[in-house]
Amino acid sequence: MFDVLVVGGGVIGATVLRELTKYELKVCMVEKESDVAMGQSKANSGIVHAGYDAKEGSLKAKFNVLGSKMMKDYASELGVKYRVNGSLVVAFSEEDLETLKELKVRGEKNGVESLEIIGESELKALEPNIADNALGALHAKTGAIVCPYDLTIASIGNAMDNGAELYVDFEVANIEKLENGFKVTATDGRELNAKVIINAAGLGSGKVASLAGDNTFKVGGRKGEYVLLDRESGNFVSHTIFKTPTKKGKGILVTQTVDGNILLGPTAEEVDDGETYTSQDGLAFVTKTANEMCKNVPHYNTITSFAGVRAYCDRHDFIIENSPVVNGLINLAGIESPGLTSAPAIAKYTVEELVSKHLSLNANKNFNGVRKPDYFFKNLTIEEKNEIIKKDKRYGKIVCRCEEITEGEIVRAINENPKATSVDAVKRRVRAGMGRCQGGFCQPHVAEILARELNVPFETITKNGKNSNLLVGKTK
Image (cartoon, rainbow, N blue to C red; front, side):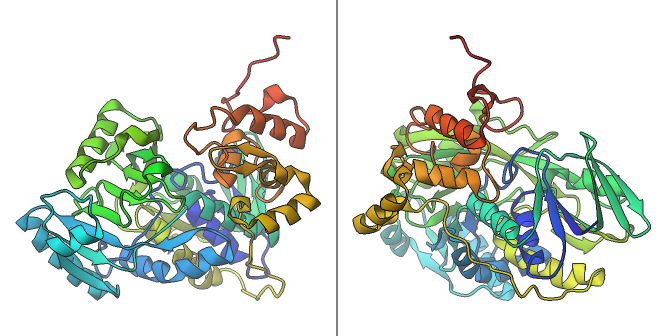
């Protein structure tokens, strides 16, 4: 019997799981995919929002500002890249300028510091590639960037190092209320018992709540499509650049990533399922809007495009609560933007204010919140690299030339928590395959290392889990 079972291996579930291990609790996580960070948290802009956009008094506003202030230290503990680059909400009309004033007032009411409306000349000095017709911007100096899947994986890995258990390929099929908790059954028949369930299932959070007997909210999906440019164009902008927001979201953005790429997107299209395919119309809209925001966008350096589906709920705010109808069920649902920013604060609140209503919280004196970065070798000095190679010669072999990722780092990703078992799982941990060639050269080598380390036949290695085999069999 677990004390707490977390459903969903995205950034919300990840940060909650880690927070739970700060206490003497037996905890686990179930994830329906073959790896964590495969839903909303892998297709995310990676923006740490300042907090000016959410309506004052909302949960989004509260947890955005709290999470933004927590993120630097949180990321540092886990060895996750984080950088304050500042956000610019750009006005292209007189109406937009009025909206900027409203956003500044709202942000200040929410507790956001260092908000300033700047004029055309200062904006163009900060961002020379901004469109000629830009009139000014709201400059949010506390805006930052982080890697969403790295944050998720590191949080879960650290939680597992502190005693949490992870069950992948565990799609919840049934939840039975017991006298002292729940029995959770997977589609493959596996069963787990827990006193408390934390529903952080993202797009599936409505279904999970319903299986437990809670039908008090509904969840829908909104697809976003992105375009990623090579690091060669990484200095095209230095801030995160937004248009003024709409009812559907913050709109298309142009931003650096923490790894030096340029990211364009996302779109906002309501969908009935979780299909994460890109479309010609969607990518054309991203391109068109980016060209309206900036001049001379280097689209020729596009290396990939992708899409994700983010969940939203019919309450139009975060749901962070003990279920009003099912004792022991905690719902963390409808966590759309700024969910990534809010995650550390949501986790702290969930454990201290919600879990504490069901279980006693005694500090885990053995908790260690520090984790070494997953990929690190290329940033070392020559002397430091040589010292590591002396101890493990696998660090002397470059497997991914684009990203300069060594065999040693890949082996480490396969064997540390949470273990990488597919090519894309390795990619998310150490960036092997995320460069200009998108794995065109290194993918077979990564697959070979996976087969060797996992001690399985090469042809069983997949790209991203079930139904994604790289090979169908041997020919000779």
